[in-house]
Amino acid sequence: MINIFEVNETNKMIEQENLDVRTITMGISLLDCADENLEVVNQKIYKKITSYAEKLVSTGKDIETEYGIPIVNKRISITPISLVGGAACKTIEDYVTIAKTLDAAAKEVGVNFIGGYSALVSKGMTPSDELLIRSIPQAMACTDRICSSVVVGSTKTGINMDAVKLMGEIIHDTAELTKENDSLGCAKLVVLCNAPDDNPFMAGAFHGVTEADAIINVGVSGPGVVKKALEAVRGKDFEVLCETIKKTAFKVTRVGQLVAQEASKRLGIPFGIIDLSLAPTPAIGDSVAEILMEIGLEYAGAPGTTAALALLNDQVKKGGVMASSYVGGLSGAFIPVSEDQGMIDAVNAKALTIEKLEAMTCVCSVGLDMIAIPGDTPTSTMSGIIADEMAIGMVNQKTTAVRIIPVIGKGVGETVEFGGLLGYAPIMPVNPYSCEAFVNRGGRIPAPIHSFKN
Image (tube, rainbow, N blue to C red; front, top):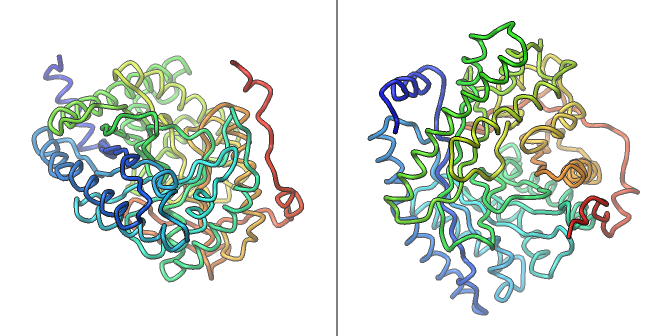
């Protein structure tokens, strides 16, 4: 039972502290859309998405109006397309037709993103997987709402270094084909290790093969709420600090649970999970970096940053997990650069480097996220950055990801504007020394010893 005090408290968090439900994401299985005829595949995909998600956006708006809770995004995740198109797609262009179909379906139902133009290649690539991966640059260039992800490693399988090398090239090609928009295509492309099946957050969302035919996942946010709560306990000891974060995370997650249950009931689709991540936006006061500063750092990136982020991530999970019947996805603190004004300020102050961000990814909820780098960065260097991040995920049994944007025609010291929730970012320097011989070895990095738990 929710009492009037909780209602008033929630209203205050919404009005003054940027609390929102970041996304309702409908997961849809497209496994039954597979066919040897490409035209039939496209017809089935379009029909299934538009029929299942026909009322997703309107239902979200109704819940917003009735409860006064902002729901920023309504999205769709689908079965990794390399699994759906394998029988019908024989060329890169065949896969691009599916991308266009997905984009058209997303526009028809009114969602802002559809995720799942994806391949799962943590141990090896089928011909279908490789075709889809090689089609990504074209798909990103000719669509508006498609998000793409490639899973290249896991704790159980190790790291597919052939796929890692290929993704360095794909990111570069995507940047080139979308350079008229400051290489925006790369902002919708992520490389993952240990990807969860039930992630509602783009660009890494896809509908896992272990999921039901359709589900409703909700991603909540609220960095501003946490920061405001911590202001009231400034200077207190770590016990008080941790309790404050836990209690606040509980309240934020309860809002998501309410929205998820309502959306599930109204759409007649089972509730999947709540992802209780702190996902920042470019809005003033809606920053994970500012939480770290409130904990006691001059800037994100100062000594103590990794410890402060570890504390924050853990307490968010401890508080949120009690507030929902099903918690999943990524759940924790996101540290994207372009989407977090505090992170941008730290980069501009030279307090934060890619190397420090990499250390922070050992304890955050995802990885190197929305980082703009010089457009002339070698593809082998990007593959090396991906390999490092995948190794962190593999060894630590956690999800890690890389979403880097080599901005064609721009270099260190310049700024790139993505707009909306994607924000803007300073171009960050990368290590100039080569890892080409390492990347070119080929094959797989084996799974770590602690993966053997059968």
